[in-house]
Length: 84
Image 1: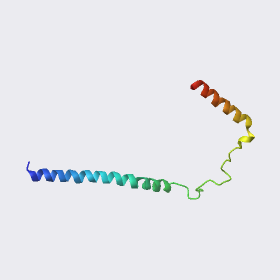
Image 2 (image 1 turned 90 degrees about the horizontal axis):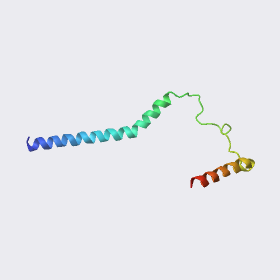
Image 3 (image 1 turned 120 degrees about the vertical axis):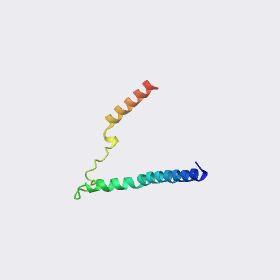
Image 4 (image 1 turned 30 degrees about the vertical axis):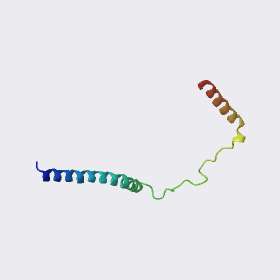
């Protein structure tokens, strides 16, 4: 094997390796875009994109459920006492 053969083989391996890396990075950047487009094709066009404000459950005021808050507090204190 001559010096020019070794340099040629090294150049080929360098270009091949860089091609693998570029292909991987390309799939990491454009793969999610392609996946989103493919999944968007199966969606219902007439379906609402976001839930309306009326359909989202509102949080319960803690002052209205004092017994629930007391029970949770007691359970947390008991857990901390037994596991520390």
